[in-house]
Length: 379
Image (tube, one colour):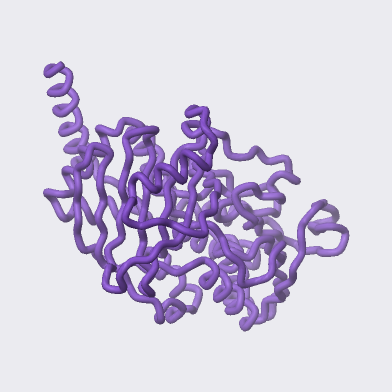
């Protein structure tokens, strides 16, 4: 089995393969050496920790402080602050990814620096760059996957691409509340501040790529400017931009014996931009399929994804369409401010694999409609 990409999805695939088949030959290649930085929000929610447990790595984050408080400010200024049902962690990708790769290496995975340039299929084998062969390949090589392009698979359409800028800022050690501050201008758009626990926070701002282009302004000016506007008390350093291929509801799972995982499968939550949980889960499922059904792994992988995320991804797709109206998000946050169980559910949908019960959806839509009608009549 060959894994292309050493981020959470690729490392999870390699770890799971060796966990299930210790005798299996597993090679993980990445264009970079580890540790290496990766622009990201660095947030690891409870579902991500569940995946680490399944991979046999329950203590991987024990030296990082759990974050139990979350504040969300809606586009219209509605604010809700609460304690999450299960704590989150914030771990820089420089650290997190390197730990996963090292864990894979310790489990017997061969890790090699290599940049993929060609892929061919012949006689039941996949060959990469005429030197590496495998019965199954897991493509976990990011938002603009080289493997996906080599296979001729369609890339994520621009309407499903977001762009974000990430940096780090100083803040008091005792500040342990995560903040998401939404902005009506260019909606959907929001800034975040996620305390790491060492006197710094991961801070950033993201919006849809097509809305950024519509401003007609340089991307740096818009992204950096809006981050400073929404978080004036947290001047950022080490700013880096990155693209996020958002889930379209039914992401493509692969081609033939090549399985797409993580960002390469457009597995990023369209409501929040969360991707680490999806990466760990899809990588684990891809690793399972590759070693247990290497002759035809794609149907097994597809069924696994559908069982784990099918209803959830359909939910986020519908909500992402509704959320094009900032008033809908205002109504959802206002409902969450009054009902703790709604807050918990929104966290599940935004950071995990939650779905929305019909009665709750109806309550939010009703509140949204009343607000829209009241606004219309007051004009």
